[in-house]
Length: 313
Image 1: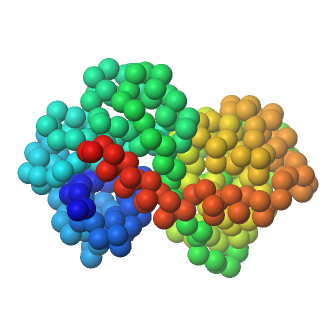
Image 2 (image 1 turned 180 degrees about the horizontal axis):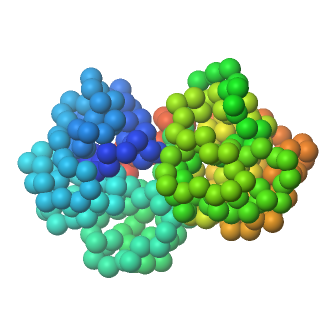
């Protein structure tokens, strides 16, 4: 019999984690599992779950006692915490708990990280970090990333494209330093956030990322911390040469199908971009095949459901 699992996502943002929660909900629905989700009604995830979720439970964004009360009242067999705040809110409840971990920074450890029945880590790098702080056992389940729809090239698309929120761990400061070494190269970043640096064209939040990918010659991902990197996989699907840092799970994503450079190294990043623009990169067909084989939505759903069953067996 299918378990009654409550997905708890405390974020009102629409980023990679929320996309994965939606994919998982669709997969559970197709497999005949009940779909229960607690999330903020002000977020896009709430709207996207219309017609998919059997039950939606309204919670405030962030950390709150209300989240714990709602989760307990839902009477699930298991809670799947999709965010760090969800982990904190639900840790004291006497209900089996699985925590999805998508970030590669080192946590403080302690009881909170020993409490779950298990973690679902988005990469081996994240699982290794959890083990190092004595956390509960972790199962690695890669995110599922579908190819983006095909669109005509964007008129304002830069030849060198990065996609990601303008926050420190995405490494745009390093990219700006690299840009200063690449005279005449048009580098653009699609994403919102407070940070800007000279030498880069800031494109803001875009709804036409497929069009930007179609216009680009090279995709660059300069993160200094990265659990996995969905944007990189989308660019692999799109057939772009990839230049990425070696942060977190990115080496697992790209393997030998792209140009990997040390995180934080602007000189190496500039050289990688220069090589890719000159055509000195691994075949893009190999990257497309890797993306399709290793990061399917079907594989993510199957791996996640197996981890849930294992947590309550």
